[in-house]
Image (cartoon, rainbow, N blue to C red; front, side, top):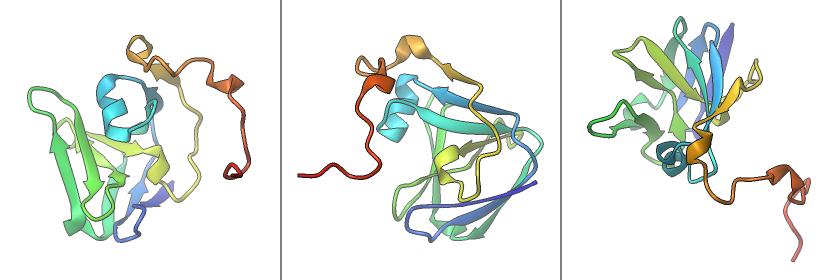
Amino acid sequence: MKHYGSCLCGEVTYEIEGDFGHFFLCHCDRCRKDTGSAHAANLFAWQAGMKWLTGETRVKTFHLPGTRHMKSFCSDCGSALPCLQEDGALLVVPAGSLDTDVPLRPDAHICMADRANWDEALEKVRMLDGLPEG
């Protein structure tokens, strides 16, 4: 199966060939810092191949010293992008960077003991189809 994705400004595009093994929503403090949100939504693939279609020179990778935590992003717009980890054996793909449909549902919320204090019962918060008025 082929999947395609890009950054927000459209300068970086990529193609992934293969299947994703897992889809986790991680609430650890590092993933919250990476995303500026309640959690990261990442797909994991051990048998997939990835190639940059455009903008590879704009892709930067940050590796938090002393950890396995890594993040790739577009140096122009800052969008999260796929990252090869574990010496290239593991491909981690931010689900929101895909332009094609995500083929599976999340497996689990992980690192819930580390979640933000405001990340509780969010299904009870008012939901709008668009932007709020006024």
